[in-house]
Length: 504
Ligand SMILES: [Zn+2]
Image 1 (cartoon, rainbow, N blue to C red):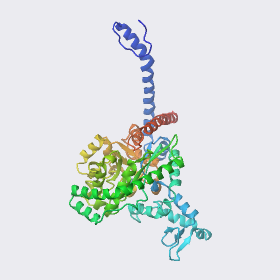
Image 2: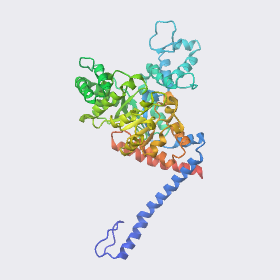
Image 3: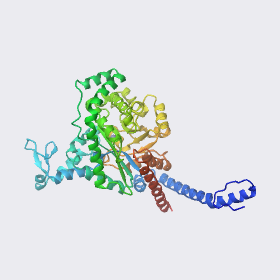
Image 4: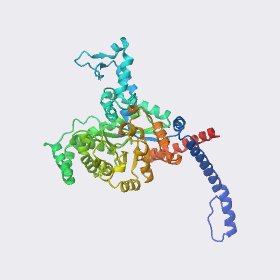
């Protein structure tokens, strides 16, 4: 009988048991043993890293060094303009010699009527530029905020319109800034939220459809709501198609012109729109976003999101309606592959009436069909919270955890934060920044907060969160996802070797 030509043992008729045993033994030595030894070595190395992490749990400087070096996968909850550091915006308005109102600190490219408007170059000549830059950074970000003199959520959300004078003009520079920072911080991927533009051509049918939608919302009448949305959709979809195409072209031209993707870094985009405007406008922006993502051929657009303060009067009044609008869009065959991550449950007790804490994540999941939830802080108050957590876990609906953002805006931290609840129920967890520029933070700091606050979240869990940030990303191309995961494997091997060296 011919000896097996390869290492695989296949029992053939007439093969003696001894031969099988001998052959299996050889195979075990040749194939299985080395694999077991390699896996064992990996396990030992991972255990050493775990032990090291446990030894530095109470030392934030040591944790910062550790997480600076650790590969962090993706940042899935990242607002483009809020992630760019304020210095970039200030440099832009100073370099382009904009005007500043020295009383109100408003900045514009043309002066207003009062004598308080000064050119930045005038302030420089008078030796006052640095003082005004310092004042601007304090109202265009949370820098130097003392925690008491102003509501933190108000301060945070008010920064966006203030630096809007520069953020619209610094998108390309900002994207390069995010890329360079990500690479320096061992972040492999960013999924950033940006807005659509140029939808002025879209028309609405006659009649006050905002009022009609509000009436349908008051009655919680889904059928009526859908009929009104049908009327609007049919009127706006044709004019919106070229606008969607132009948005896609703008993103893809910019993406490739800037050379944003490289061997170590990938960026993809979500189209996001605000919820604090009239219902018909929200719906128009939603349809435009769904249309753009569904027709994107560049595989750069990952999904759709809705944002702005959830406790705002309009957000609260129309939350039910917005979730119905998502459901309406997701019911359309042409949009069925469009992914949605929804800001939901970014609320705490005291911010809104208690009963309003019980249904936003539920509706985002069960009505809007969200693929991921952003924040999800009010989870413990949600109606049938345990069932909701189980549903999210069973349906692989990931949660985007933004620890520092929640601490600053909502004042929720430590065991008030539901992260351990999500973990207990095996909801896929990802760690993200929200608005690192405005919050003067970064992804490293989120992991430092995670490890220092939640001692029962072990190294293996943290590593899982990193892989989740790629697995649950909206990267449209599975090959790209696979490439980043392979990259993470080798980066984690190198990281664990490094930690092993310092532990010795
Ligand atoms: Zn956000």
